[in-house]
Image 1 (cartoon, rainbow, N blue to C red):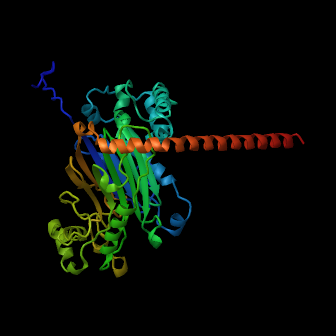
Image 2 (tube, rainbow, N blue to C red; image 1 turned 45 degrees about the vertical axis):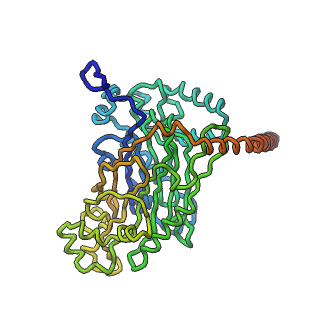
Image 3 (cartoon, rainbow, N blue to C red; image 1 turned 180 degrees about the vertical axis):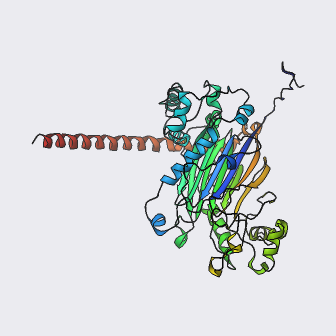
Length: 463
């Protein structure tokens, strides 16, 4: 029986299901580094604020030989993170209404300003320590960190239980990873941080020579409230020649085959998290998948573009053709596309390149290159739209999902799997202890060498 609050509002019935909102966005930014006044709020603004933001980028650096073969340029990724953090955590009346337990302030406190401007340790760093420390040590680290959360010098972005409402409605960076031009980051509402575990990352290169990182994927695996998630951000083989779609199909199959998440063995009663993409409860695949319109059906493309007849054009979409034939993404879902092709635009323009270019080599048939697909129960797409930023030759795309977590099933782990995991962990415990001893010995030797080196330098400075 439903109860009523003092305000006369029906209180939700207690169930074993938990629902979250998840925003998924993808954007090929054309090798351009963002400027400080680039506004991401229009792209990140959804009908209702999300609890989780999964944002994937492609070509955050130019895909030239220097960036593909040389040292990774991390400065553009840092700029994107700064802009995302500002967009998500900026005071917003809509967010205040959504988190009705939050106290709205016209002027953010000193802590809030520091939380935005000061570099922080990401939540993924904290989770990685969980794999290295035993339970007691990790709890002490967690408690010592959360006890100083109201200090401007606190190293965590996340807010833990006991923090103020203003802090709890902020978002923290759970994980981020770059591979050449591909960049994937996951942001979560701060009060959800403590429910996330088993954060792992895996990269697969499918570019030059079949393995370099100018094309390929970044995958992030995590567990939230006992439900496993996998987010795959991909940039597949480009080109609109006949047969190029088969190369993209091959990229997808290789990514599914080669992506692996390694998990440390621990004495726990819970089974080990999945190590492959398709073994997760819920999977989101986003990115510049580069599927074009079938080349054999391009006679009246321009007319259909002028009429905005997207459904007629989508009948020629390579991804849909290949998927319906069972050659790629079999069993995956994609929402109904009701927006214009997202590629290829002139810079700072609403015109496609094909509409203005006189050179045949530079022409590109407009296509829906930027896509979001999903697999798994409990995912319901609420919207699937594109943004209108003219920053790149691609338009950004985003989707909002309702995510249902079945807490009842997660409370009943498979006994056979649990027993196997516990037995394996016990068998590995001696190896871990031995490894810890070796690490301690190496650290001691390094400390001795550093002490001797410092002593030599001190002696040399006297002469």
